[in-house]
Image (cartoon, rainbow, N blue to C red; front, side):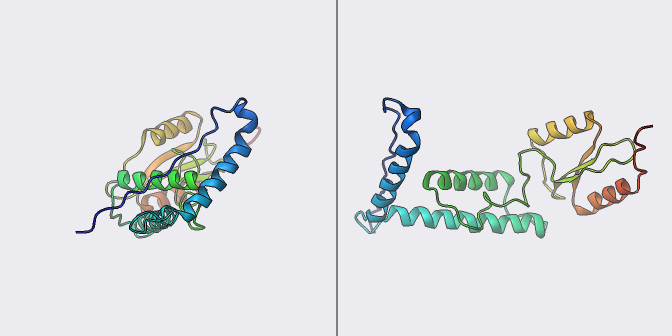
Length: 191
């Protein structure tokens, strides 16, 4: 059996600098450049190259998360629980922030499948109809889709402000609601 190899890295901080605010940006740039050079040269027993390992992990998480997003949003057939997706997403985000490396197709860099801000509904139709200021729809998969506390808070706040805001499990019910909303009479302005 081959012994396992352990790779470690030292994180450089300039918190001991006389004036941290003044030196933070240059120090971080210098630390990042130093760390990148050091990591590209690191080759510990057994051939463990830390930079390559981190890049491979970022690529692996990016591909895995994109596959899961496709299954969830396009096929409506998720293969992992939301908590598993969230753990992987958080790990990817942490690695990208630590290394400064982002894949062009990273789910942390794209907008579309996920809301821009946690809890904000997925579909926003800012057109007044009837007595509503607009229509807001939070989409969940038909089976197993659960609302977060942030999503519940946003829906409640939007309803209080005069919006039609609801959660829909599956596209069919959301489409019917959008059709219903569009067919409402526009608000009479100034009356």
